Image (cartoon, rainbow, N blue to C red):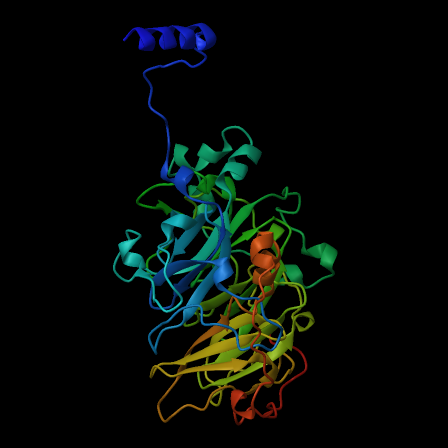
Length: 446
């Protein structure tokens, strides 16, 4: 014991300085997000309502022309409808057909292998019967809150009736406001400042622009993004900067293109204003925010379609009937879809009998607006084309290749195999030949 005592006294003399740490009664404030590694993930939602996420490095960068890798194993009648690349801590805004918005962090979307379908969205979100996700947008909520003026993020919550006047659709919107030169296209919104907005469109032709900051306070059960009239539904939503252009397509074969600033900013509870004047039996089927270098691909109910240069679509004022996007007649049937495409991409065609056809964009002829188009898919007797989607595969998407370049050096230094081939003759749809247009007048029927 004496030896132990002496040794302990020596230790005390040598190391017995004042305590440098402090012991206090507190609890470390950690959240689940603090335990999640930041990484880029691929998030997919299928047409059938299945969602999942995968690490970006699960996809190998390939040369253009490669076969790609399957992003998800889906049922035969299902396909990937929404896809994006986001950081694991990024917030996703999920807009539904009932005009509601839900929030999910990327890491909250269950991770699954490429061979898995994912988890049903009804198990992740409080969706009502028949409610489906129509848009998925990534946002940085912290950055949005910091950039917003003081108090603006709470404007949408102060009074549910704050924007009732804005909610009334103006019946005297002028059809001819876009007939003059570009400088005559200005309206009350011409001096609107640019910023971050959510731009939305409904089946009945209503559009609405709301500051993004009004969606920066997540609610577990979702939040109303816009009030819908009975029988109406939200078909699209996009993040804009206040200075973009908007294109609206109707099933009557018409399209209207106008500047975003022609739609004034409204609060979250407003219904919006008329974006396109529709006939009684017509409905809006698509909203596009034009991308540089993109073309417009349109498809009709009877399986015909075409590619048309963006420059073919003139700019008009908001609220008009628009111009011809595709000739609608007994041969073609109504317009069922309009998407933006780039060279090297593919599209997915879906019939009401469950037939899915995936075809490269290059196999579809380029024609003008005022034409009928060519055969996209050969349909059986009584079969109709009901869906047109832009296929977004991570392996060939340029956005994903850009993200791949930002990965850690350890991943970049790996030797990645490349599976590249020239497209076979079978890859191109048969019968995709030009069909002469009807004898139509040169001027559009406004």
